[in-house]
Length: 216
Image (tube, rainbow, N blue to C red):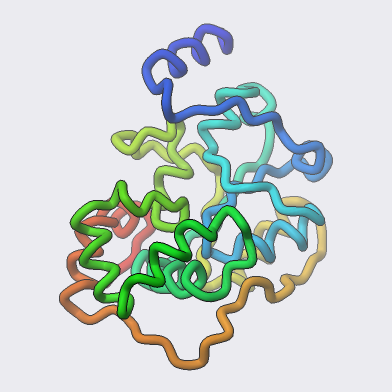
């Protein structure tokens, strides 16, 4: 049954899924974490697993090992779409230490500020295809397809209530952990999106706002 289900998904969504073996630490913790960029995921990874787990979609894990994935406690953390967009812009533009972000860093350096980038992004999102700007629900849907809004994890915590929600995850996993501070943006003053751009982004991230209960 699992084999035929995976074959069906692979045929229907061939460009969305990748074979992603389950981390050994996922199995040892009996928990699978879907790391959505700029939602405190790096701190969660280091605290619970001792290493980063990458930004794989839950659909990738289901495709690789359906039964193994289904047997684990699956969780993720989300963030308000507007502040996540702002944080991603400032992180990629100035703070990211990762070589994989250098190309995007060079692209963002061309813009005078975040509002100018927002205009360009909304005009042509595919030209700025960083995982940091992908709608969050696409990391959590069963198929990974942008039209699929059926969530494939057991628990979704919020960045805005990270301490309380992380404690809930720890209780479920039967561990006691604290969160380190990682990838904190060091800029003290940052230009935020204006009201017009925020509203336009709300439309772009409409599914995130709806599924995760955020308001503008």
